[in-house]
Amino acid sequence: MGETNVSTREGRTAAGTSPLVAEVQTRPEGTFVRRLRTPRRPRLWYELALIAVSYWLYSLVRNAVPEQQAAAMRNADWIWQAEHAIGLAFERTVNHAVNSVTWLVVGMNYYYATLHFIVTIAVLVWLYRRHPGRYAAMRTVLFATTGLALIGFYFFPLAPPRLFDGGGFVDTVLVHETWGSMASGDLKHMTNQYAAMPSMHIGWSLWCGLALFTLSRVPWVRVLAVLYPLATLVVIIATANHFWLDAVGGLLCLLVGLAAAYAWYGTAPYRLPRSAPERPKGARGTARATTTAGEPESVKSPSGVGGPSGVGGPSGD
Picture 1 (tube, rainbow, N blue to C red):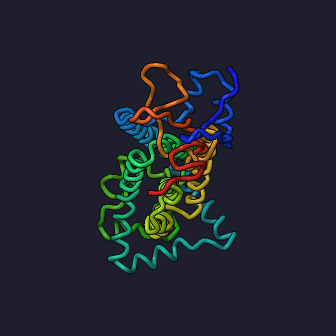
Picture 2 (tube, rainbow, N blue to C red):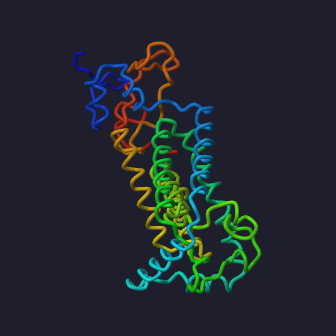
Picture 3 (cartoon, rainbow, N blue to C red):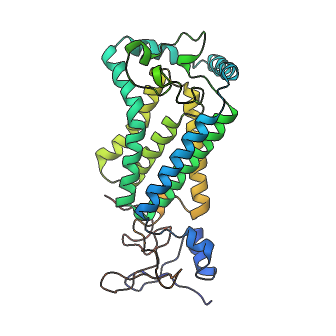
């Protein structure tokens, strides 16, 4: 196939900056792999089914891991001693201080139990509606992050501080008789209590913050994007659900998820075009789309070349 020019709507030639653009220019059109890697408008029924099945599998695998109490306690003691060795074993101090303020700790218990799911789902919906061209890549980051966490749950069972014998931590849910943890009270038999490393409260909150900060142009939304994972870090420590090293594990999982998405799409998710062409019904793999008026649009490249908002970078909300 001859040389392919990526053109803007005004007919000017623009050079692609993404590895995926170069692949689009050199690989035969219509190949299966290229179609998979090209951003397309997500389908609601498919995304709902994928999220439902994925979460079911996540819960099944996470809870099927044997509750190795002895190993979990040994690992918790190792984490606690390691934090003491570097002079950063501050979780118990924070836990006791917050526990003395009833209204604060009760609010944190409910924060821990609810926002983890509510905010993550809300960001997924926002991406689906406002950034369809970037949705699949950001969803890939989330799924890869969570999948890696399952490996951690299996190979490194870890007792959370509130269950760590001899740690002197307060289980704030039990003490204040609130609903704030699936692993406390009557719900403790429904989930694996020793799946604390890495912390997916941190992994998911960082994912939410990253999506909102890089893709939104509303100042107060970007502020919340920074504050949300920071507040989550305080909550997981204050309620004795995680050591701070669990949060580091969650961050590392997210970085691997970002690397996986970058390797697949050839660029960072925020650099993909905000809009995405409809999935072709006739000629599969076509590189050109048309507007509602029939005017040719540019190739939607991952680097944003030729997109409605120009070359590269996220568009504002």
